[in-house]
Image (tube, rainbow, N blue to C red; front, side, top):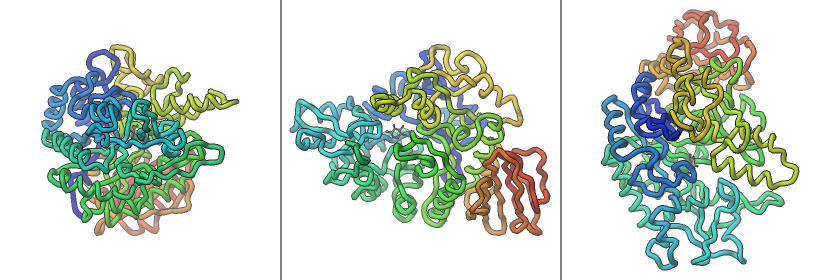
Length: 561
Ligand code: NOJ
């Protein structure tokens, strides 16, 4: 397995709208980010992945791009962007852009033309089909509720939109579309950006027969995923993109891939196939999904989490590479979901950090994770902003007997807005995010949880992350060691080893709020133990691990030599 800078890096994701507002309009912006680069440097991350900053009407907060070559006005100007890139490179930070090319905005010039008439040269840039008996061409559901097809009266055809109707899907079958996209990618890379995170990139190739999905009884729409996730030509498209663009630069590439399996991920990331470096899979964050997807939010078991993580660790061990994440702008806060955001917030946030960062793969930190930001008890739907949440809520409210309190409960558990409230910088009004009215209200707990407090406390989650990142630079086994799960059937403890040559790291994480007793002498027997990191101040180098008491949400890592 080759050694690469992007395997050794830690990546920090910024959702610009919620990061920091420099001009008081209530919306985070690029200058706001530039002003915080020293903070990121202090944390120690190597790369920033910036969620979309392109010109957009913001139906889906920038994931609906109107112009790939311009910056969203609310975020600033291209000069601001160039300054950000310059200031980052000056500090040795790399910048990875979000690449959203499964769809554009319906306000993109290509779509405006495409829609104008059936014989417009850009007609075939998007996916147009005739209806079936006065209905949509097939029964696919949009990720944001309702049909994935929108009728256009003027030309009497439907266009496909797997997301909102303001996000029409591009037609990747058309070679001109592909060339235009590649050219746009080169334009950004020539500017000096250091890579791409690729939005739903496994959806590019649709089964050209557009078959119906299998609908649940009584349902009009169905998930069409098996006809567009890893569709027939996907690897061909990605290989072409690699050959024509990616391989020409020394960059980082990560593909977001809902529904991807380990077997498919191996194909996407095997170095000898020349596609991508890593993928984001969704299996662990999908734990607890029910028939209604994430909104069911059923209880989950640690053994299931371990099984999923281990399957991916093992699956990509020899070929390919993992990306490691708990959080992003689409997921609820990890400390609320997998830890305990009450009594054990600090302990469990640190434990989750170790559990993830010690695995094999490139770790991602999402803004606010490093201070243990939590989910948000939105008092009413009026406080929510996310299109997925709002559409789902509206659809459910139309059904008889639905109680809005139940829906708000589900939103509290799983809505994307949990991740999108402004970063809590200090205890002043609006958490120091803006001097204006924030576009999404700050989490009411900002006086307790904020960056200023974290920086003043040597024992904070922030400094714990800082230490973890430093460790990654010191211990090669963290990056390149083999992974081995321990205590497979255990419902409280997630323990594993990482081994490189003669060195083994023992990683132990208590996912419960109870003390646990376990024995680790099989692994440690006779070896020198050096404590690398822990959230339990009483742990020492040569601790006796014959029958060790593990505190609630405790974590520790020993280096055994
Ligand atoms: C995945 C992005 O992460 C999400 O925020 C967005 O809504 C969809 N793709 C559509 O672009």
